[in-house]
Structures are given as structure tokens and as C-alpha cells.
Amino acid sequence: MQQIGAALDPIERLILELPPGEGTPPYGDRITGRAIDLIAPIGRGQRCLIVSPPKAGKTRILQSIAASVAFNHPEVGIYALLVDERPEEVTDFRRNTPAQVIAASSDMSVDEHVETAEGAMETVAAQVLEGKDVVLLLDSITRLARAYNATAEGSGRTLSGGLDATTMQAPRQIFGAARKIEGGGSLTIVGTALVDTGSRMDQVIFEEFKGTGNMELVLSRELAERRIYPAIDIAKSGTRKEEKLYPSEIVPRLHLLRRGLAGLHPQEAMTRLLELLTKWKTNAEIFGLLKG
Image (cartoon, rainbow, N blue to C red; front, side, top):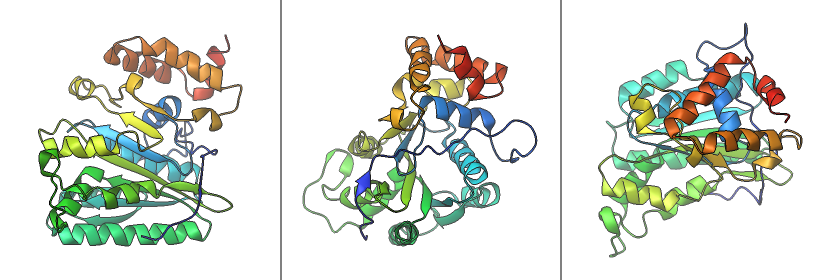
């Protein structure tokens, strides 16, 4: 995969909050977008990892992010790379997401999964080299790594879970391609990592990616089982150097909000945040309450 230039810290936020009232796209989710803006904001050029157990709402969150970016930033190219997804999930994504969908579904071979992923990366890299800003939704990094493991010739060294020692090189390069280019465009990757699947290999893959991104959104099985959506574990989620993405006068208010939620049980913290998001129509109104 071609290199797309020297990386800089993201300094321009992709605003996910959708405006209240008319003009909000029907496939958008105002609550989810606003929550991510407050808990783990996304900058142009970030490597974002959504850590998700099964049935925690990761697909819904990806669709919400795509809807918000398409509405608020129409100049940004949006692509979705779906690897080893069920065919009906691919159809749903194509019909309900404002993204160019590139898919290698579960009825295709692992070789086709790898070829599709590498072709998608060449496509988005070319866009970035032309100076464009691109968002790539990658669902999922876990299944992509599995595909590379299945097609690997083998190094003779096997990690825990049956993962070949050289398998992670290509998936890490793909995720690591996300960056803000000096004097050019940006590639933002929002990838999902599967956890609590009962597979030791999936856990090893997650551990390999943990800490390699600069934004993590951790979803909670407990919250999802209680039908609390978005099922975000606030204390475990966040963005590195988020102070570069917000005006200086807003950063202390963000920190004040987080401190107020950090000591609470995950269910109580997300419930409190949802109460704020429901009571106040915009995040600006919430910031107004936090002037101190």
C-alpha cells in the first residue's frame, strides 16, 4: 500500500452534531452524534477505534457518523469498507448510509476479503493524495485481520489464539494509514474491533490494535442489554489531544463535564448524559451551563 505523506496531529473537528428541526437527515441520529462530540470527538485524520461486544450497536453508530459527516461536511468523501459481513448487512448499509460501500461479504473467500480491502485503501489513498479529506468506515478490523491470518503463508511462529506472528503487519498498516497530511488532505479511519466474542483470536487482535489509535469509543454490553443507546462506556472512551479540536474556552467545560461523569457507574453516567442531551437541544447550550 502506498504511503500518503507525513502525519500531523488533527486540528479540525468533524462535527457530528446535527441541527435540530428541519434539514436533519432521516437516517441521522442527533443523540449519538452529539454524545460522540462530547465524549470522543473526531478530527480530520484520526485513527478511531470503536471497541464493541456483539449486539452493542456498532453498526448504528457507524451509520450515524456517516450521516452526520455527509450533512455537516459535504466536501468530505465517505467510504465504507465492510469485511466478512452478512450479505443482508451489506444491503442495509448500502441503502441506509450516505457512503460509497466497498464490501467483501461473508459469502466471499478470504482471498477476496483481502483483495477488496487493499483495493479500497488504494482508492482512498489516491483521493487523499489529491488533497481531499476522506472518511473510511472499516467494519471490522477484527474480521480483516482474520482474513489476513487465513491467507498468510505462515512464519512458523503462532501467537495465542492461533494468530500467525506476521499476520498483523498489513492490518496495522491499513489502520495506520489514517492521518492529516502536511499541506494536503486527510484520511480518517473509523474502525470497529470486536471483543467478548468468545474467540481468543479476536481478543489477541484487539490487544494488537489497542493504543494504536488516537480516539477510542468503547461500547458496553451491559448498557446495550439495558437498551441504553448509544451504549458508550464514557470512562473508557476518549480522544488524544482533543484540546486541538475545540476552541480554548470550550476545553475546560468539556473537562468539567467529564469529571462530573467519570466517577459514576457506566450506566448512571450514560443515563445522566442522555438526560442532558434530551433536555438541551444543542451542545452549545450544555457548554453554556458549564461556564462555572
